[in-house]
Image (tube, rainbow, N blue to C red; front, side, top):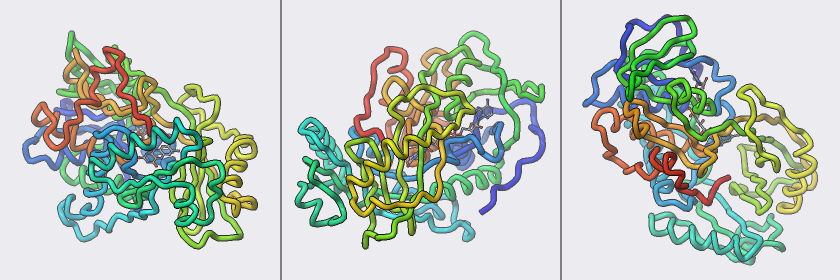
Length: 404
Ligand SMILES: Cc1cc2nc3c(=O)[nH]c(=O)nc-3n(C[C@H](O)[C@H](O)[C@H](O)COP(=O)(O)OP(=O)(O)OC[C@H]3O[C@@H](n4cnc5c(N)ncnc54)[C@H](O)[C@@H]3O)c2cc1C
């Protein structure tokens, strides 16, 4: 499905809600809010990059999992799985909306030390209590179920085949965007360059074209630029762009079954990707980068990724790289978790930022959460308050141990 083009200027000089950023998260927020029968205000979505060339949304791997260490992150992804399975009905039943593909190859977390295994055991207990089918596997059990792995250096694995794998988040994004617009949310191609603030309230945004738009409430959905956007209102959020690499490769010797999304103890990830395979990893030196820095350090393939692939799956000794790209995580330096909700003092500035690599699968819950905060002032479906801004103020991390 091609993206619907955005043309035109804002039709009004005042909106009840201005959403800064119209990619996955901004569009989910726009759709949930525009579809909420208890909200009938005007919504403006401002997007600086209408082709989303620099957005995390365009560089994602679009996978979802229940294997997190925090109950709230597990519940968020359970909601995602339920929402995408009924996507057409959830969006009103338009017969043009396709089924959303979910390829459940599962995630396989692997630990090579007793300390790593202890973390997997703790996480599995939390996941099981939430109803996830995660099971711990000895090296022998792993080798029996997935004979292509080398498990010589593995102490324990953690695998869940349900509600985990690739989902077609890009199609969800495009339909959220289209349906939000049909519901009356306005999208404009423009850049917010300033945010007006009087005391403890934001009251306007200024666009790069010069217009000043009055805003009842501002939602920061600007991805890796979250900090720059917050600073326009004199506010802080510890989110920075960090590079993440993805490679697509093919092999001569196929595995005969799906490769789960494997989190190798080296930090390298690998998985089935249609007829091919996908892999990636964070760089060892992982600084914040400039918003337009998408440099791909090819040495990482030779030095880190390929050796890890060949060690874990001997059939990956001989591989052919077909494609590669760099994307930015909106990395929450405090605790690698989302931040959703109002600033503690400036209550009409809402954050929905800092996803640190798991924002695609959190988009449905985040859109619904923002819609609830705007319409009712509180969360109703899922209590997302552990992910609120208060912990940023107090510097108290709400740490997620299962970050990829
Ligand atoms: C390599 C990689 C792999 C990933 N894999 C997964 C995965 O498997 N599963 C998962 O759940 N998540 C994954 N993620 C994370 C996921 O892609 C992101 O969390 C998600 O796309 C974030 O969406 P967003 O809308 O917040 O940010 P973005 O997609 O970055 O969108 C922000 C938008 O705001 C716009 N904007 C910024 N500032 C302004 C301004 N001042 N005015 C107007 N517009 C502005 C930008 O142009 C941009 O389009 C991955 C990310 C990467 C990079």
